[in-house]
Image (cartoon, rainbow, N blue to C red; front, side, top):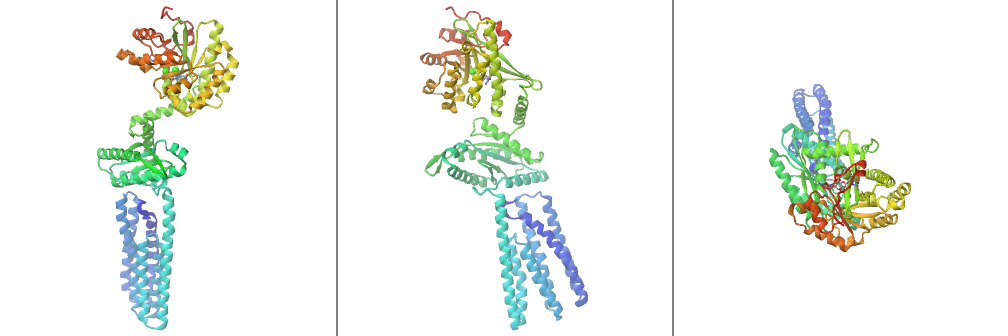
Length: 620
Ligand code: C2E
Ligand code: CA
Ligand code: CA
């Protein structure tokens, strides 16, 4: 459409102007014919002008239907150029006819006609540089010849003037062209990479969809987002980031060109590719996948930018455009959903949009929306899962529950990550903490025997600015120092990847307040052992997956190794997800300190926990 800056839109408007100029002035020549000439020739010429105008009208209608692809537009443009040329050139016929007559009035008319149409052509055709030059030269040439043929001094002077006039017309026309080109180019292109920009993208996409709607067929549309580009930008500076973007664009451009597709930059590190048209959905999808695959590989190849050897990957969302769904925003949304899913699944991947994905995203949005009201609607409650200590006393882990009127029960591993993404976790976490502290005090005051209470704390909560003050205030409000010593905060190992130093500072501050720490889901994250020794923790929780494995394979090597590590580091160990007698026995034999799981109890209510008495698990 906008490709190669053909100014289709400009030129289609000029068709109308030419029709108006021709049809409004041409009848005047019938009058001139009636008074000064023969009339027949003017009538014949007038019919020719009418026919040419009709041709122009049809070209304009075709354009306004707006269902042409790039190739068809090129054909249309060629036809339109012929039309414009003829509708200017038709005046030269009258020029020649009148110039050959004896009456001097007709000569005046012929000269004004020809010079007038030259000015019109130079002005209106400026968006088509070559056409404008060609037409102006062709129109001014007969005028020049006319003056030369007079063979008089004054006429040679007039011939010279007409050359000057031609030059001025050509100059102003090409100048306008340059200006148009520049402003049009800048409006539709990205300065850094010279790729089409978001505006270009939207118009191109809408055009493709219109064309699919009227003629059928399929196109694909890829949304490409670089992974962790921000890190490069932040650590190596924007200049390096810019150069990387230029190189990535040029690699993509090359591949896309081979595949008859076009690359656009939507902003930042987000790009899009829109394909040509396929008649078959399967072929279209296959082409989309193979291009995506090639893109991932090409993008992943090494970059040398200012002595930096860089590596970057991308996540690609794919959606197929078809003739049934007709909305550009809808397709953008779909590709966006697919791209985010690719990111979510560990980046450096390709995801094709499908309806299930869309349902998943809609549900997520619904959860996000409803979660915000969960506290004020009293939908959040706490459960306590008993933990059995080696001395047969009980402890517990606090687990949050959300029961929504519309969605029903939503498990915490679904809504906690969403709460983390939206920031709601801060409010929610505060509530959980306060309720837990209240319960702890209540139990302690009622004389209920229990050793420890573990509370899950999200890393976002831990790193939140006001967290330590909040905890301090809650402790002052609810707990005695003896009660505080029962509190354990569980942080998950997977979350450690980010901001460890900051985390350790906060952990130390909380430790000062009397709170102990447990490392949850141990074995699933990246923490090295040296790292582990730096954390002020007193407990490890073996991840449930290892206990599951123990059950399935009856091989306890990993579990034993973790127990050994913990013992050497003088940490207590909790095994979670204990479901069967065999696991319990194995863990006890290997001196695991604390056991938790459905074998003993599901997470239960406050009242149930008060009445829960563990059967003896070990003779001490
Ligand atoms: P987690 O901290 O690893 O919690 C253990 C999960 O395993 C709990 O699921 C618990 O009900 C379940 N579980 C316990 N014993 C067994 C067993 O024998 N078999 C099986 N199959 N599962 C068992 P739940 O309550 O659905 O919690 C899931 C995750 O949600 C938790 O994993 C934790 O990461 C998060 N979460 C739960 N409550 C909170 C909370 O209050 N705050 C924060 N930040 N996260 C929470
Ligand atoms: Ca936990
Ligand atoms: Ca866990």
